[in-house]
Length: 255
Image (cartoon, rainbow, N blue to C red; front, side, top):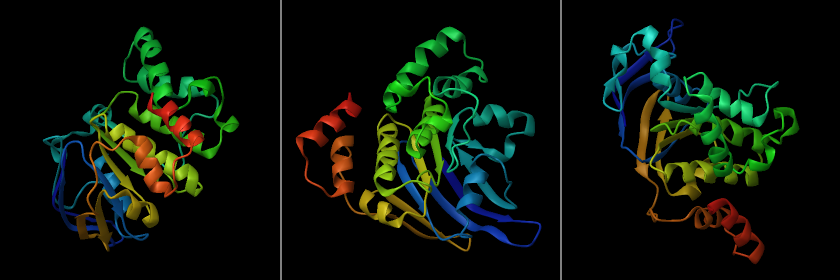
């Protein structure tokens, strides 16, 4: 799904955003991208959505060389990506329903298709009871769920999440990462850039670590069951025993 071969990005200031980065991510993988501020995480993410261009090397996404995508084709390319940001980027004067529907509207979907797809994605993300709310009426976690719903409503093959839990408390962070894991289980490749090393260490998923623009670590962090349910996943992250109340809550989101 993603292939970087000797990718370097040098900014006009002379700073290196990426330095000979080489790695591949297969279809259906869930991968964390970690590293301190200034390590190159944002540059890598921006390269994938063609906000910055490499000064050397090649990037391929789903078999397509990004260098060959002309400027006027970039919007079409981005329609096949789901992108989630730390600051949500919601439209403040639109409801939850309209924020998600807007992603379909701008990509040419009919109103009939929108009416069919939006309720489904709101159920998946646990927002069915919030569809008429505006962003300022939602918690931070709920706003991030709307952002994820908007990113995934087109069921893209690749979802990029840049610090999706950066503004959230630990419990809410678990719910957000769990939602991303659930999306990954539908077949979507997920790449998550994060500073949350504690979360990463509990996830047991593959980790790419950057330092000064270079890939310094690429490993699967322990064995994990690929058929692990989202309920089991959340309980493992919380390191807490199941209770009747927690089981009921998890089953509601599983359904």
